[in-house]
Figure 1 (cartoon, rainbow, N blue to C red):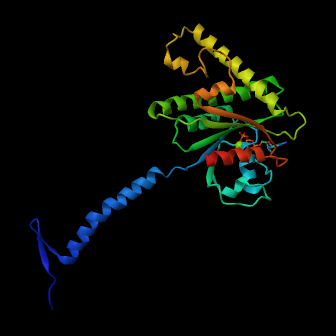
Figure 2 (cartoon, protein in one colour):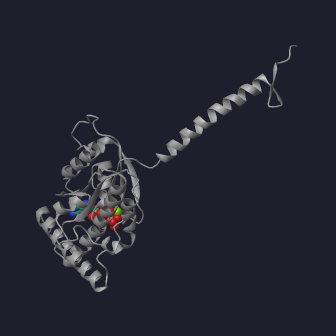
Figure 3 (cartoon, rainbow, N blue to C red):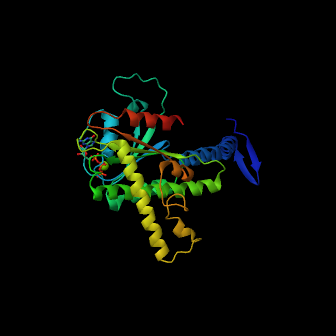
Length: 280
Ligand SMILES: Nc1nc2c(ncn2[C@@H]2O[C@H](COP(=O)(O)OP(=O)(O)OP(=O)(O)O)[C@@H](O)[C@H]2O)c(=O)[nH]1
Ligand SMILES: [Mg+2]
């Protein structure tokens, strides 16, 4: 019986199969490790649309509607949920799927005031995958001052988070794209629902009032004009208290206001906006 040839490597005597296996391991292990690390870096979901807004606005209902094309009973959300949707989710029941849209994710977040940090953190710790934000509100409750204040307060925090994100990203890249924000005025099937133009005006006025109050609070607390941390809490242009959607473009956000109703299946305006985000 002929014995296998042996080789002397660095003082060790190795048979041919052992030598071949060792050489393959030296070549293949770095390649496999490299691939694993690269896929780990991309393991977070890509193309995420964030769903935020006060409780009971209809965020979870919209997510379920996109999947099932009908209003499904929901429970108050207590944790965020990220769901992968197929491109056909943005099509109405009777329109053909031309395959032009990519798969995407929706991140539904709780609207309870104590749990809003989940949405804010998604914005301030950007992974680069958040392609748009839907701020959903209940159009039928905004004639009550307390609900209007709550709706505008959360929006203020959200816009501030976008402004910070934009400032951080602008420092590291030359051209930072504006993030699209859809103010989705839901429940327009209810007779107390306000029209979108009215809601748009009310929100801009309320945000301006909040900015004025916050700035006065900072001045009274003795904040210096160059105190960066305090200015971080001022939304938009430092020279005026007025907040307008147009004025906010300079601070990283492109606002669109559109009404609809999940209950009446009137969501085409919102789904078109989502499609535009995916195509951008
Ligand atoms: N009339 C009407 N009711 C709606 C509409 N959309 C949702 N709702 C109802 O509004 C209620 C709240 O809906 P959810 O989707 O749970 O609200 P949410 O924004 O997820 O609330 P949180 O999870 O608490 O933040 C439910 O009873 C829904 O059936 C709509 O278009 N019209
Ligand atoms: Mg919910």
